[in-house]
Length: 202
View 1 (tube, helix red, strand yellow):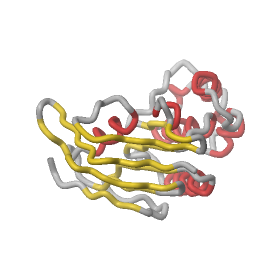
View 2: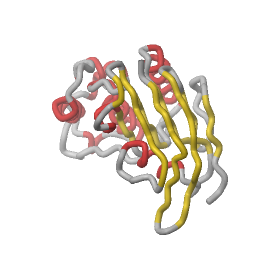
View 3: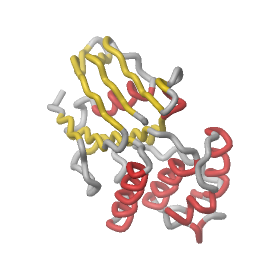
View 4: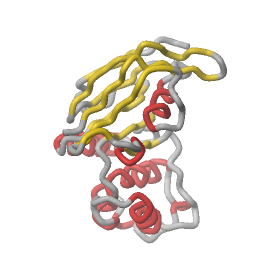
């Protein structure tokens, strides 16, 4: 089963310690909420978990059914606060590219688009999308390549009420499959949370 372990993790940026001594043992099905104001280090922790930042100290271990991932990046998705979309490309082209790049056994692009409510917009260039539609397409990226750990940075940004309900359903389904979710948010999402890590202002 999937498990994320944090062992005395500390992170510094620009010579300033953002957090230190962070410990946690999160089993399959966990939904970890990082709740706090801007500048408190939530995004830095997500980027550290993803491997983009090296921790100042401690260890981060992501385990799968076959044991710890030698390359942690192969076991996770990082969805940042920017959607990473290219205006001239269609929604279908984006998902086909991501699926080919990331591999895995996720759903087909057409099914992912249907799940996020964009089936009718599959062949539109994304420059025609609203901010909420762009966010839905970014969420569809999580579906076309299966990864056990989702790292989500303000995932509800630009989503309307229906979009937030969709996000909650996607998180619930991922947890039901034994996945983990770690989300940085200003306010908790609607999806049930198993662990909360509060942050003070930096």
